[in-house]
Image 1: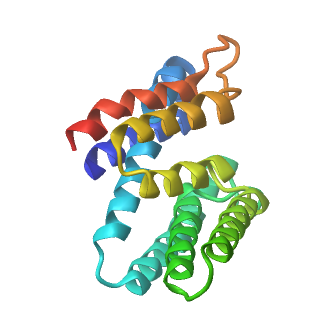
Image 2: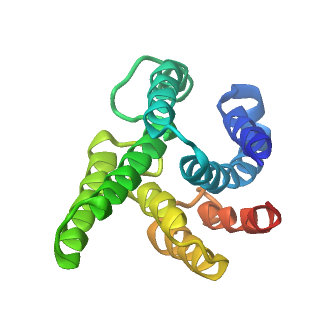
Length: 193
């Protein structure tokens, strides 16, 4: 599944090649929308199955830092701090998941644990927004939601909510196609997984 996600992401990034973008840009973007939900699922599954969360986070930090320069050069044409790649969104989401899990292990009332968990979740969404990561707070909602919503029916509702309501305004001009809604086409691949 992660290889499919990687393939979809590479196809999406082909739109940054000037000669290809003019002829096939919309096609590359449409295919590329399938990548993020698959990466989100794999990140949550990785967190769930790893025996060492610290090492998992360290690998994500290294990947985020290493991939930022090529991302900036590809998207902005220079090193730029205006936007961060999607790995930062995944990393922030995993930190939120870890923080919430840690809160649940602490002693205290259920209402205190719920309050702290919500505060961690909101802080993670704010961090993604402030850092201007790809998918921003919507990505954090999707990844954290996928982790805690194990039943497929809930995951489908979450995907629909994030992609239509939160990211539905992402349209490819001049056609007006709501390209982000095409991410829902990744659901059958997730289901098979």
